[in-house]
Each structure stands twice: as structure tokens, then as C-alpha cells.
Image (cartoon, rainbow, N blue to C red; front, side, top):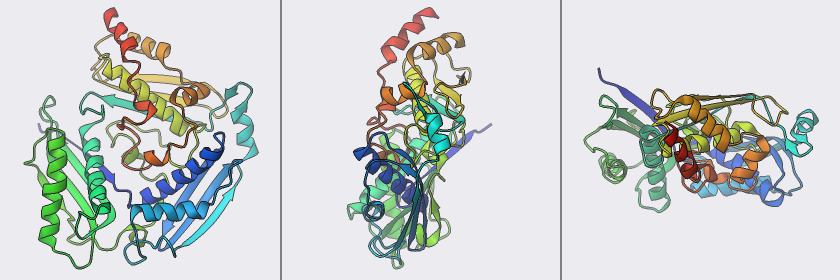
Amino acid sequence: MKRFFTSESVSEGHPDKLCDQISDAILDACLKQDPFSRVACETVASKNYILVTGEITSKAKVDYEEHVRAVLRRVKYSSAETGIDPDNCEVQIKISEQSPDIAQGISIKDEIGAGDQGIMFGYAINEAESYMPYSIQLAHDLVHLASRLNKAGLFKYAQPDMKSQVTMNYTNPKNPTISTILMSVQHDENYDKEEFESFIKKNIMDVIAKRHNLNTDFEYLINPTGKFVIGGPLGDVGLTGRKIIVDTYGGYSRHGGGAFSGKDPTKVDRSAAYMARYAAKNIVAAGLADQVEIQVSYAIGRPNPISLFVEAFGTNNVPMDIIYKAINENFSFNVKKIIETLDLRKPIYFRTSKYGHFGKKEFSWEKLDKVRDLKNYLEKK
């Protein structure tokens, strides 16, 4: 029986991703001046309109509106007719301070309590070089390359709003292949359809497939409705945190439901998910299993998780009790320890807000610095 799996990604010009970037740009601006800022920032994007709301408690003095407009310019939107006008759109700021009921639970002597209750997942698989599933890694790479070409002026007719979708064929799980690539790319009203589609296939789809040493004889679809002129916030309302599967593992792993962008590291929706990825990636890279999923859960105001669960899907190369022991001895899920271990009080978050939070070597939770220690557990097999 044939087996297929599909993941999608979106470009930085997608309305939801605009909102994620704005929320994280504001978070970074606060952390740059005050590393202990408490931020829960939400953004809404609509027709030539941006609303920034949420709770921020910080010593930082931030021009929120200027950060909004800077993100819109960076994405390369230029007018209300193509998506949104960075210089003349309406920007409304509705920010209040963090609830004192939450603040008293987080600020504990010599500890940090979880900023909310919830469950978080981390995942890794030894499939792509990034230890990510092929489908989501390729989907990210496609829109990332397309956006770079567009910004450089090399992608004729293209506008910033783009989506990708990759279907992998796992009929032979030891030799997965690309079955289908779908790209929807916003374009100018007057464009050469054949030239546009040929460029996408040859200079984006084929390039990414070859980069991963995968096949180029896949089925492909480009703008299947036949037209994609109206895009960005002009075509669809955007919201922070609405692309949680794009941000994580493309549906290949479970998700606890919490979004990342606009949240400071005391919010375990974000920081604990990063720590779980860090642990899972090192476990897989050390050879203890071919794929690992880690779930942790927290109670608001408590510094330590109330549960930890590990699933290796039968791919473990050592007994599961050894994997549990390896995690408990090498990784702390205490909130304060997570923030310290991964150095999460720095203004690093804008870079996470597009093309996924995982699989990028630049981030601390992607380090493989625990592999040597973890390999010792293989000897106990």
C-alpha cells in the first residue's frame, strides 16, 4: 500500500506570518533594553490596518508603531493594492501591563514559575540533515528561496505572499521520494503565466529537491486556482500564532496547541518546546533512537514540569528506560534552567518568526553539544 505524508509552509509575506514577525520584533525590542521584560504581544493584520495588542511589562521604551512599519517594509510590501502600505496603513496600539495574578506566580525567589499551564512537544528524526521531517523542511526551503529571489529582484512578477506544500512518498520508508510539490505565489496582475511557472519549477522547486538529493520527477502544481493577485492582509486577515504547525514539525509530530511568537521565555509554550526539541535532537543524533518525541507539561506558577513522556515509535536502539534516564540526567526542564541553558533572554526571536522555529543551526536549541555524553548510554544496551 502506498504511504504519503504532506506538510505546508508560508512565506514572510503571508498575513499570519506578518503578524508573527511584528509580535517577535516588538518582543526583541523590549528584550534588547530590558532582558527581563514580560511580553505577550498579539498582532492583527487586515486591509491596510495593523492592530498590536496584549500585555507588556518592561522598563524598555519602545516605539511600537515604528517596529510595525519596519517589518512591513522588510517583507517588501509597497502599497495597499498589493497587500499593505507600510508608510500609510493605519497602526493601532492597545498594550496593557501583565496581570498581577500571573506576575506573582512567575516571580518566585531564586526560581521562575511557568507563565502558563499547558503541554509542549519536541521532536527529531534522522531523515534530513536538520533532523527534521523532509516534508516540512522542503516546504520551508521552497518559500524561503522564493522570498529571497523576490527581495533580490530576481523573481519576475512575484509578490510577497506565498505558500508551499510538499507531499513525500514513504511507500519505501528507507528511500522516501517527493510525490508532489504545490506552490501558490502571489503575482502581478499583468504577468506571463508560462514564464512565471517555468521559473518556479526550474529555479525553486528543482533547486530545493536537488539540494536534499531528492528526485525532480515529482508532480507539481502552481497557483491551482489559476490566479493569485490579491494577497497579504488585503486578501486575508492575519493573526499572531495561527501557523503553529508550520512553526513546528509540519504535522509529523503532535502539538500541545500553544503558539510561540510574541511570548517572552517565561512562557513555557515557547521555551519548553525549544528545550524538548534540544533534547530530542541530541537523543537522535547520538543514535539512541531514529526518531523521538518528548512531551512535557506544566502548571502555572510552578518552576518544574509535572510530567515528561518520551515516545520513540519503536525506533529506539536502547531500552526506553535508558532514554528516560539519559534525558533526566542531561536536560533540565526547570523553567529557570531552560532560560539559562538556551540563553533565551537575548533578542533572538524575530529570526524564529519565519520559516519555522526548528532545523536552523543558528539557534541554541539546535546545538548537538550533548551527543558525546549521550553516546555513553549506547554502551549500556
